[in-house]
Length: 447
Image (cartoon, rainbow, N blue to C red; front, side, top):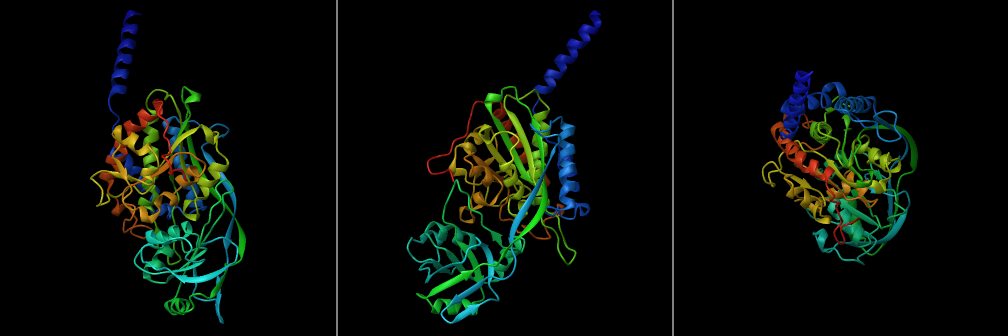
């Protein structure tokens, strides 16, 4: 009996010593996940498809194998989101003077309501230089990205932004999935949101000549489409319910296949972020019970307009007011040449004290060098941020040339970079789940 007690004590001492060792993220774990999620077998994990469901099922199985539990109120690790999605069907129309344009107009974003206003050409090629009161219908030119114009025009009260069609705008439209986005209003956050279109050169010239005239814009009809997308959710219960819940997220879907048979693998966007969530779950579940509870969520339907994240916020397994913060991982598979080595950027870094706190704990993260791209508003984190939760996305190279292209495959990933940046978040996450720190919005930072 004494020998048994001695051996048991030795085992406990060994286990404690092993647990004290730093967690090491293994490159073969990263590679294994990517080789499945970004394989030909899953055909690009198209939103709301069987391939997306297979990816979600794989992630759920990993969560279960790590010892995670179903989230409160759930019987398993999958949250099926049955969504009636409204979408545009048909062509938008413009009318000004004696002109009616029903062909060639490309609609990027709009709500479902017609609008009219006076045509004005922006007096600047810099979106930051826009001032209020210029006009309801704004013609824009210059090298600035369309989304920079869109964000700036909405802030100064424009109802419609019109730009020339170009190779760059056509590529941007393809990156959106080749389908216009229907704007939905948030009753809790009412604000002006402009529509955005491009027109061929000839029409743009005619519009410029018609400055001061009234233009009317009619979006296409809106129809209902029923979709089912799937979120994979793992839950690690904490020891102190009053300490709140942390939310680590990514999106598991991508663009699927094209009509010509090309597979859009989405190895970086966002299999890489999904892998980060999986490996963070593996690491945090390996120790003792954390003080705070943790939700690990991989959303479906992001490429169709943040559908999975929206469903999650409408059907949260824990009350939203219990969520302390959200950290989203998006496209961490390549090193941005503008950033320090083995460092991620955080969208909206300046909006809160979250990034600074994680930096102090060793997470290699810094500010977004592309504020003009409005990345903070373009990922799943924004659904949570609009609810008042401090929520940010971290990315590697957000403007990588492989974005939404057939080259976003495993061959174009930087797996050592992925491994290093995932490793850098582990200890800061351990600190966060066991601390009293609650991230706060800075003045003016809350959307």
